[in-house]
Image (cartoon, rainbow, N blue to C red):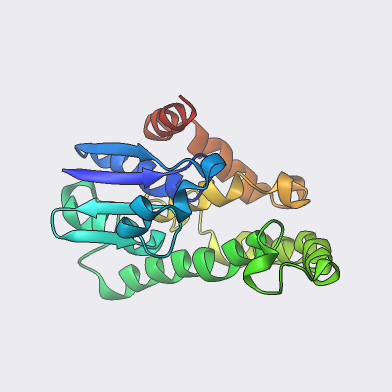
Length: 208
């Protein structure tokens, strides 16, 4: 049995949707950010990083969305959510998700988590980071739009583990002060993903 520790409106949605796509048997555990549960002793025993998601497996705990997505794809190879038998194509999937994780998501986080990079008391520095977000996040989406999406899915004709992850981050475009009309391919992908039954189930479960 797998157990996904999640919070709504976080990148946990990507792994949640992939678990639904493959038909995995899993349990959900809500980490209540309103109660700062991600920093509580019980959750820190599971994920000392104090962040979600975390995926508890029979072999141990996994963190970091790209790793979790690959794990599920490898655990359910018949679902065909990653080109596991093609080293170059598989590396391209990893490259795509690594960009989302290490660049786009970090730029987004500057809007509300500036304390990770500068002193929390440095209001001017945090405000400067927040002002930069529409530009920095917009630049990331421009890269995705022009160079990364191969369409109609992230990697081309085949749906992969990149697609739920891309959709998850695309949910935050407007809140980051970016106009989605600038990125029609991203907007079309977001609309297409929103209609997938697995994504609908994951979103509904997280909003219960």
